[in-house]
Length: 448
Image (tube, rainbow, N blue to C red; front, side, top):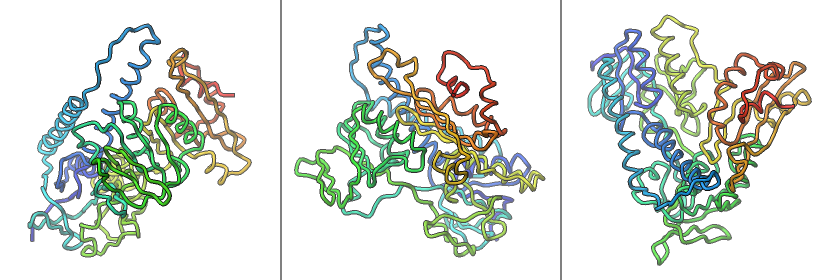
């Protein structure tokens, strides 16, 4: 029959750990299946190590700005190896904490890869386990394009394994991972080329954000090459990598990083045995309550194809556990007004509708308020990094349906405005709010 649980979470990342933790708090007997380190992509190859590197890049920019503030600093280089060692030790401490937390919460860890046997049974490392409720939270993995020589490049996962800093690097991609890696590598001293298949970066973001970030990346010295149709990757006679496109040949790279998207990790789950199918991209369709097409099986996080963000997976998992074991049958995640931040240089923060989306839905009822300025922190530095803000409002009441920021501290500014928007904030509500001066955030309550 196999060992029985109330709930098994397939995946020890943000979604799987959160649903199991909340279910266990409600008294359920739970297990988490994981074949790698606990914490998932966010802890091991995503948010956490990325943010460490982003802070290091910010410090590099601060050192460059310091002389303009009167500091006389002698810089003696940057030690990539030391930073990697300290970053990896920090991540390992989080892995260990999760392991202890599972044990303290009486949640079993099943070490291995899960495969469905039927709708209520999985096999892990040759053993059978059954559960009344099975939550698929297996996450995603980086996409490697099908071009000749693709194996010579690194994925974003491989970036975090680099023991030495590449002096010249090509990053292939136009999304948030690509621009984040490009910004931090350039700030830390690498020479970066960002290779785009189409014309622009961050295609799904507000046009103001795309344009402003492109300007700042170019000002920082990043070489942005658009409309490159890559055909193969080869190693030259000098040992360096060369990108061969339809009409271009780019050479001399110490590393090439693929940042062309991620795919759901569902192929190995044997979903057919549970009576489940994926969509053409490999995602598992779910309803508003995280239910799949098979009763008793649910999916949260990146495998669903809906807002692949750590807080989304956590929130969806917790609400699902509340619904299943906490006596709250109405609990579900509201997927509207999900904020996100791109840890580029400078950072981008956004929530709600872009101007284009708002005009497509509401036409002439849309009114835009925006500003672009040099924040005080850069008022007299040689690096004149700009801040840009935009509010998107709709209707006679001017309800705020979009808020978009790029610039110093944008990542910290947005959170409070998300709360206001979820409460139905109108432009007049922001106008009636006292400003905190002098800050960049005050611009959002003083826009005219």
